[in-house]
Image 1 (cartoon, rainbow, N blue to C red):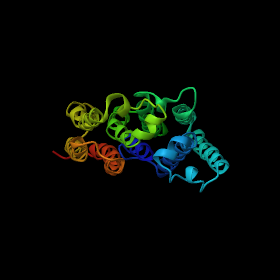
Image 2: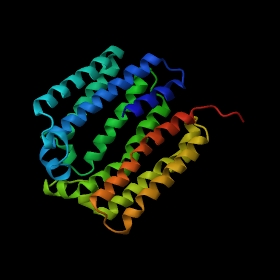
Image 3: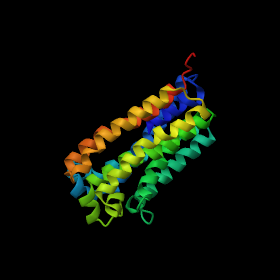
Image 4: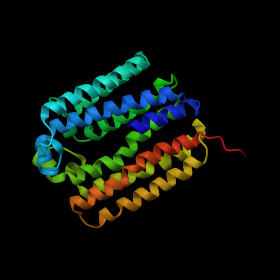
Length: 269
C-alpha cells in the first residue's frame, strides 16, 4: 500500500514531486496499513490458532492491551499526517480507517463474505493510490489506472493466500473464494487476473500517454505470474507450498506499480 501511494505521487506529477510530500504521504499510508493489519490480527485470534499459531497474539508474545494501544497510535499518526496535508487527504485516511475496520468488525465482516473480502482489500489499495494523487492535487488518468490495476491484480494474490488458509477458514464457516468456487477454479481466476494488466495496457497505455516499456513490463509480469501459478494446478498442494508461491507473487505488486512509473518517462523517437 505504501508503494502504491509513492508511485501515485510520481505518476501524478510526472516525477516533479517534492521530497516532503513523498515522505509524509507514504508514511501516512504505511501507518494506516499497519493499523489495519494489527486490528485484523486482534479479530482473527481464533482462526489464527489454526492457520498461524506462531503469530504474536496467538503465542502470547505480545499482550492484547499493548496491541490495542499500538493500533490507536498508528491510526492517530496516519490521520494526523493526512490532516496536515489537506482536507481531502484527511478524508481519504478516514475512508481507509472505516474500510479497514469493517473488513473485520461485526456486523460487516467483509473478510468472511464471498468476493467482498478481496474487493475490500483492493479498495484499500485503490485508496492508497488515490491518496498519493490527492496529496499532489492531481488525480489524473494514470493514477486512476494504477488504482484500478491494484484491485484487478489483487485477484492474483489474495485468493491464493486464502487457499493456504482453506482449512481454518472453512472451520470458521467463512465464505472465501476458494471455499465457494474450489481450489482449481481459484487458481484459474488468479491466472486470468494476472494477465489482465497486460491485456488492458494494449488499449489504455496509448490513451493515457504511457510509453511502450509498460507493455513489455506487463507482459513479463503476466509471464512470471503464470509460471508461479501453473504448478498449483497439477494437484492440490499443501499449505506450505501455496504460501511459498504466494510469497513469490507478492513482489509482483511492486513490479506492477513500478512499471507505471517507468511508463511516464518520455522515450525519444
